Length: 526
Ligand code: GLN
Image 1 (cartoon, protein in one colour):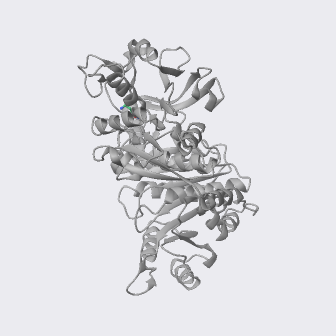
Image 2 (cartoon, rainbow, N blue to C red):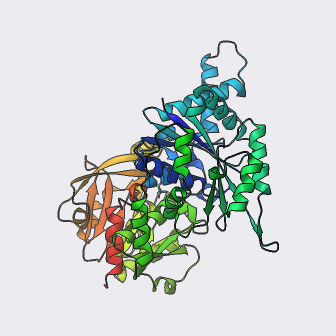
Image 3 (cartoon, helix red, strand yellow):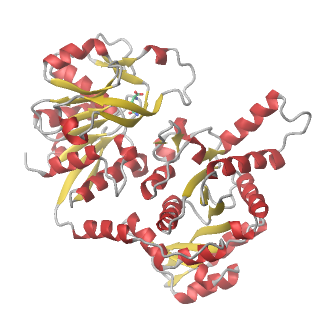
C-alpha cells in the first residue's frame, strides 16, 4: 500500500502549490522512493479540455491523451513519474461517475449523497492513482475555505484515518504577508487558515510558508505554537528567481527529515545536486538569445507554461539564457520582431490573432529568421506558404473560413462526425515516421518518434504536391503516410512546423531536441 502526502493551500491561490508538490516529489525520488502525484481539482468541468487558458492557464496533455491541469506539467518535468488520466481528478469527473452509476441503478435504492457516495468515489480515485507507488503526493486544488473543496478535504480526512497515522501526512501551504508600513511578517492569515482546516478535522503536520522573504526563527516559532506543529515543521519558502531552486530550498529546510519521521520511513539522504547544476548554468550563462512568442494569450504567461519551460530547457542545454518576449499577436508591429533571434508560434484555437501570427511567419520566412510553429503554428505556416509562395491568396483553414477555395488545413473524415467538443480532438501520443536526410532527422536522430497531440484540424493532403514543388519538405508523417506531422522548408536556417506539442515532453534534465536545436540556431549568426 502507498503512503500519502496530502497538500492543501491556504490564504490565497497562485502560491505555487503545484511546483512545491513537484519539488517534494523530486526530493523523495532522490531518496529512492517510487512516487506519483495527483491533482484534485474542485471545479465541475469533467476535464480541463474545455477551459479557457485565460482563466486556467495551459491545458497540459498526457501521453494517454488526457487534457489536464497545468500542474501535471510541473509533476512530469520535476520527477520521473508518468502522468495519466487518473492523475487529475476534477469534481466534475467524480460527480459524472457517481451520477452515471446512479443511472445504471448501481446504488440499489439508496439516497445518493455527497457523503458517502461522492467522498467514496474520491477515495477510490485517489487509491487507484497511487497503486504500485511507495508514496503518493495528492495536491488539493483551490484554497481551504472554498465551498467546492469541502468534499475533497472530507475524503482525504477519512482516507488518512483509514490508512493510519504512519501512512498519511498533511502539508499546508500558506502565505505570510510582509506589511511594509509595520515592517513585519504577519502570521495571522496562516493561523486563520489552519484554524479553518482544523474545523474540517485536518491538523497539518507541516506548514510551508510562502513569503516575499525568508521566514525568521521567531516567526516560525510563533506559527508552530499557534498552529500546533513542531518548529522544524514550519518551512520557509521565500520567492525564488528560478523555480528550480525550490527543491534545493525545501531540502535545506529539512523537509525530507520531517516527512521521513512522520511517515515512519528510513530517513535517507536527499540529493538535490542536479538542481544545483541547472541553477549554476542559468546563473553563470553569459550569453543570451531572445525568442519572441507570438500568441494571443500572452497576458497570462501560464497559458504557455510548457512552452516557456521548454525554451528555458533549450537554453540550459546550450549554456544560454533565453529571454522570452511575449508578443500579442493582435497588437504589435513588425519593428518589434527585429530584435528577435528566433520566433515561436504556439498552438491555439479560433481566429483572433491569426493575421498577426501569419505576418510574423512571413517576416521570419523572408528574412531567414528561425521560426518554430507548434500545432496551430504549423497550420498557419502552411496557410502563409500557400498564400504568399503558391499564390493561393484565399488559402485558409476551414476552422476560420469554411468556404475557402484553398482549404490547406481541414478536418479529416472522423472529425466531421464529432458532435460534442469535450475530449474529442486528436489527443495524446501518436507515432511519427521521420524522413531521412531532413533537418528533423538530424535533430531527432531517430526514424520513429512519438509526440503528444491536441487538435482537430490537419494538413490537407490535396495540397502536398504543390507545397513540395515549391520547396516544402514533409519530414514527419504518421506511419500510414496519411497525416502530415512535421514540415520544414529547404534553404532556410530553421523553419520547422509540427502538428504535435513537443513542449509537453521537455524536462530540465531531458530538454526536447527540437527546442535545443531551435535555440542553438537562433543564437548562431545567420
Ligand atoms: N485549432 C487548431 C486545431 O484544432 C490547432 C489546435 C492547437 O494548436 N492545439 O486543429
